[in-house]
Image (cartoon, rainbow, N blue to C red; front, side, top):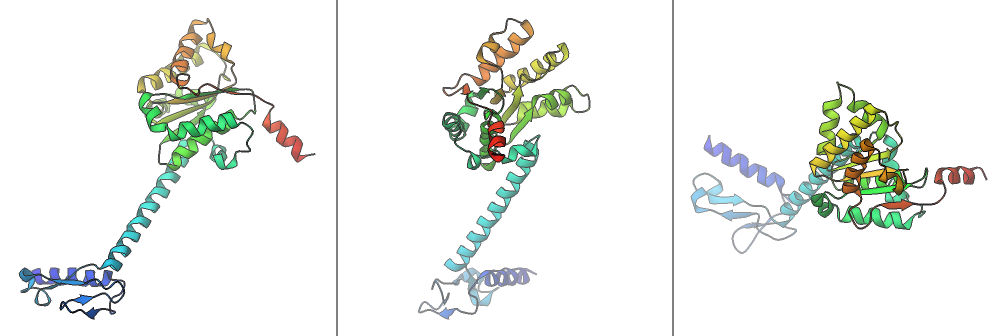
Amino acid sequence: MFNEVIEGIARNAMAANPNAGKEYMGEDGLLHCGVCHEPVQQYVEEMKRFLNNGYVPIPCRCTREKFRRAEEENECAKARARVAELQQTGFSDPMYLRHTFERDNGSSPQAREAAEWYVEDFQKLKAEGQGMMFIGGTGTGKTFYACCIANALIERGVPVWVTTMQPLLRKAGDFNTADSVFNHVKTAELLVLDDFGTTQNSARNLDLLFELIDTRARSGLPLIVTTNLCAEDFDSEDIALKRIYSRLKGMCCTCVKSPVIMNGSDLRVQSAREAHS
């Protein structure tokens, strides 16, 4: 039985050699690879009783390179599968997948610089719980640059969750989905809340919104917010809004490049006009 195991190992080792059959006998009395000229066997006295008079197959440089390439390909395949999984679970709207730095038309160099900076410094910023806020009118590129950050981090294997406020509040208020939503809110390495401030400020919505924001704040993980509210709106004296805005500013407006103010015309309208001109 033991001999069969040893012989099986030897056969596998020889099969792994991409240049099997091209060996030659070297001056050292060992078989060598005909390509890289390294030995493909070594003599082990203790194995003399069991295998080929003690000559044990070993990998030459060609075989080691073959194993290295196979391992790299396997790791690349795993990384691609991981990115695909994160893309599937990370976006509430598939359109967000299209918002990448490669599609940037250069309309806001300041926002581009801030977004790229956030990606490059993400691990440090995550450890400090620092997020960002993009402020601007409709169509100024807030969502685009926030999603550029999300997509770039996902490509690096970082779990990100991007969602708009209305479906988030709806699911957070549903008994069947609330636990899943709050668990996602407190565990995603980066949470992006798109279109903050567009929902109705009903008592129920404000309670849910505070609970969501407070849950994220207590997680210590970063939050990115896009909003069409202006800076002055965050100084509201309404008690319910004040406690929400206070937490948002603490999470999203403490790093040196935030908030990012997005000025300019509606890019969607501009694109539509150019398409029909």
